[in-house]
Image 1 (cartoon, rainbow, N blue to C red):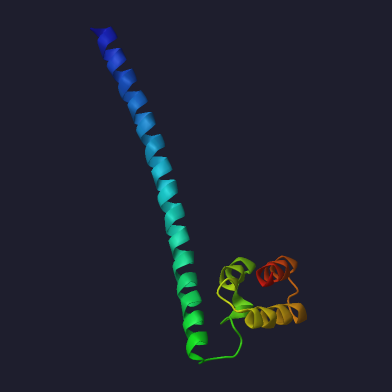
Image 2: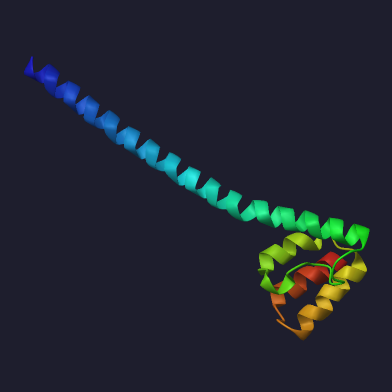
Length: 112
């Protein structure tokens, strides 16, 4: 009987370890998804607002709103929505100011 109890306890302990591990992975995945949603949603909204603003011709003349506050990755995500003249405007501005090489390469690539 004691052997049966010992096995039962061992199986329960093993199950609890597996459960804790699975819950930990689930928490990590949830945290990562939440982090992505918080950063991606506003970025996507701003990108669409930029496109709408350019389409109807209102707002500042520069192709990307709040350009100086954006990261390289955020600017790169917007490049595909710009025309060649807008890309050249962004490139020229970047050359005169921050001079971020990776961004300048991405603009040149988008220009073909």
